[in-house]
Length: 255
Image (cartoon, rainbow, N blue to C red; front, top):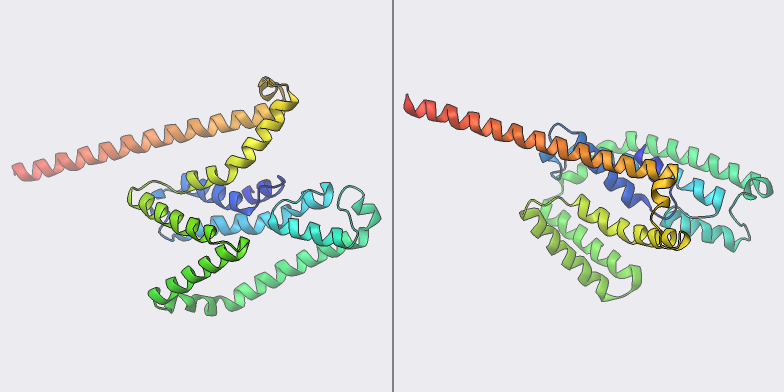
């Protein structure tokens, strides 16, 4: 549901839905401390949102002509090269194309399911590769991908710098998802906030007067309150458990 919801919002992309789904799974988990160690719960949550985002990102592209992520942006460019303008009139002017896209996505999902089921035994064998060799290949691939995006070394330096930053945060036990979410969603929020304030001539009252914006603000406040309450409750449980353990240890020593 998170992947579908984020995919319906133009211009956000799958990265945000993956991180939001990961954060939601971690918040709802009974063992959040295991997240970040390769636990299947986090992998399944993020990949499920990633797959769900693909289909829903087509909705703003076909209905409004606004790409939902980088993949649909490329698809938009391909359609425009052939003289096809996505939007409300696409369904009447090029109905056959729209249904062909629907059929292609259905076939692609079925094919992905079959390949995943049949190839899972082969894919798992990747884990048998020695870790130094596997990590070296992954590092080289990341560097090549970072350089190939804009053909400049600055992106490679940024990759190395953020890798070092991530290692430091990992050692300090600081969670990654809030930082990455802020990095990805920050510019999008700023642009839309400026646009909204320009429309309201600098007044923030419409955010609290419109039902949709008020509902989203209320949900955000409720989520923040629930997170604080759950964190406080977990801290109390940990403190109580440590106190009980210290008391039992003292009793054992006295005996």
